[in-house]
Image 1: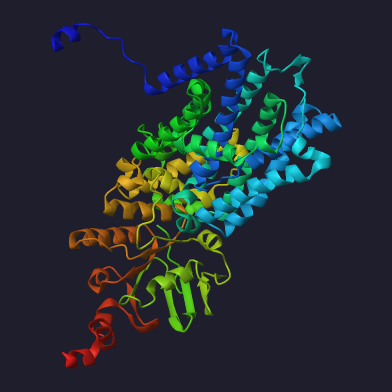
Image 2: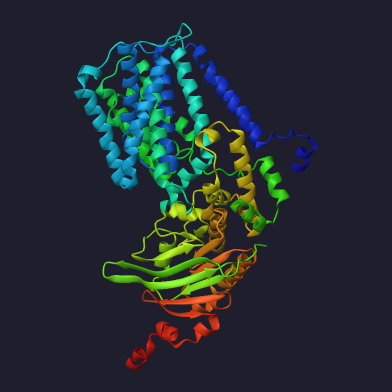
Length: 350
Length: 265
């Protein structure tokens, strides 16, 4: 057998990296072409919802997956983004994109506020505070009637337009809006992971005292993690409001926060790929299994329990096996100064 | 080689005291460490050695006394500021970032010397690439100097015990520290491993580092230390070159329990 095969000159498989690039381009083309497959409005709606939840999961991933701070109040940030955008657009006729950015900014301010307790409170206690935060935002929505219309909710949220083109659900505009945000957030998360900030986050997750001893300002980085998660959730919240067309306090319940957290955990904490698979399963499953009626939530629960029993690191939560990527330039610098630690040490002190 | 500046201590500790409630954990301790010296703090369990490390690194604040690194007074500085003055420590129970690769652990050490912002890393600016490349090269240089280069891609938790210790030291070096505080580096090692580790400490000295070492086991430090300070119940009971300290009656009493215990048996 072996001899037979060796006669053939099998084409060499491209390197891992090339394969990855090919895969990414294919996936991107597929995602861009998706609205042309002629989905019904119902399915476009589901696609947009999945997209929004991937973004929300990526936001929470920065907090939970990278920094190790568990938040159960993400719906609060989503609500802040959604309401800020809606109120600004409907009541003050502000441009949609400007309103979205302001929504993100206000979410950031609340992110700082929620990040502050994390300086003193840890673990489960911090999670309880974030849970409280989500409920406070919901209560504010009910009580602050002049702005939020209270329990009545806000109807007829206008669809935005870009250069005169309406970004609605039916023409796929909203889908592309979500896709654009999703790509930006994926790139941001990817670049964050391999940076000083990302490493500081991950160091804090594993061992906070040790990271303090490495000179990491843990106070700053924990607050920063909250702010980043808040901003991204706020941005996604605006798009979510457009998709729904109607928001009230029941849009942003505790269920939403737990769903986002479930996506992160099911998909694989700390990974980007995991957020996709997690959101697809947990958001689409209840839709696909409508035939099961109320039993579909049992199915949902069973899946989570089985997952946690047999694959606690998440479906796609494996550690990378490829060697750490060292740039050509870094390798060159290393080879030039090989073995001269002492010299380096002195020059670094200047 | 770094030129040792004589008459100038890298670390000076004067009359350091700290109490927890009614217990004097550290009681009026003074010592100093000169450039490129290996100095050991030894003493039985509970003598206050690790407490002194926690004081030196800013984790605890002293009740009395002063700590100087060169001309800088460290008393009121935060742990982060103290790392920036060139002091870095390792831990008795290894505290690596287990989810991260060896090289990433060392790169965390370069954190305080890295100046690029979140903006730079998000948009992959020139500043980011330049700093990240030089940091990576620096981390690889440290790893190859310490004989860990082959293991740079492994996850820290997958390494054998002795290597984990070395990675911890590599991470401490990456902060740009000239003074390394090693907290019981030989803890949990067998005789051969600790002999190897002590050779490693000598090697670090030859690279120009100054080392303050905590050890529980006297025999381990005797042949590598330039000077030894002995602590018992929070206060210094002896100091000097190893051969003198080893024969000091006070030290023998602290370690063996003194005459009273002997009589009782």
